[in-house]
Image (tube, rainbow, N blue to C red; front, side, top):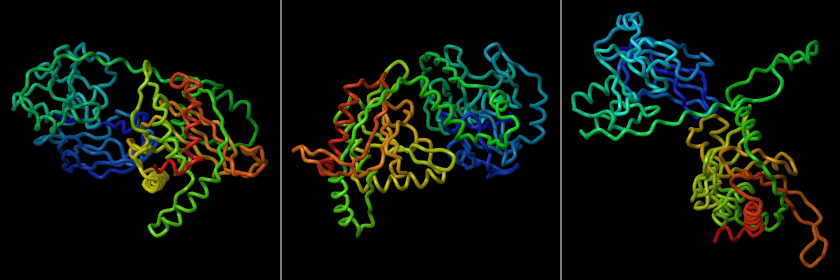
Length: 442
């Protein structure tokens, strides 16, 4: 039967997106892996691939459409031998919804359970062709083609792990599978926690206050909505505390200048931010208990130092992650950071490039900010706010008064993950690395 292709969730925070461009038209034949469309998420423009083969029978959402909800049908895929008449037949067929599917709010045109995105469950087919179920009665999500191949090969779908969106079993999964006994029933997934509600006066109440005043109303795009939601959640749910230190940069600036002269022939120019990334990565290794994230009812202690760095873009920001930063040279970190920052500003980062990490850096020193407090990006355990390096009077170890280039930093810490003394050790390790930069090359 015709299968709905649904608007996919291309990132964990995506609730809706813009169907920017179709790469197929009605009547085109597609195979698994073919690029079908470009979809703008709250963070980037990403390509959407087909997970099944078939013919595009009908396009339901025109390109350029904004605010398309995740799991909304955007097109209909026909199997071999089907035509547009089958779409109308399926759409007019009476709904046959068994008790297990009573929670569905909408009857799609297809008897299959989900389309290419694998996002939402659809009503079961007619009783003569029931949807496959696992031993505990849980419905198994598989494409019609995958079910047919599995039947021909004598495979148990419950024993096959799906590689499609949301674990949906597709053609490639059954083609590489071998016959096996039924898998043991797995525990049902815990229900998702409800979204954190934002607080504050209503839209109408705020607009009433400014009635009669001249203003421009600015609608929120997906990125701004996501930033507002996640940072409101962060400040409401994370018990922040703050640790502040001044770091003298003169030794680092001198060392950086010497290195850049030697690296000039290779076209490499290290920034102070590159040293800060390296210093934080090594500090997380020196204080491993602080290299952790909050995971609801437990903590996850990471072994590698995966450091996120905030990159400002028009209308928002990204936090691309430099993975295994403790293992990389300063020049490698510099090149990777430049590449990530460039693609972040072009909104070309893939989700895996800005998700994860245990620690983040936000540097506003380049904008002349002396110091500030950054908001933790969950589930990170901490974030370092970096201010500008400025000339200040300092008292040397021998008691003499002098002048040094001093950078003020503030470590925002999640108290559920890192206690005060542990946070102080981490910040001391960062300070030691930056004030003694040659040790970072040892």
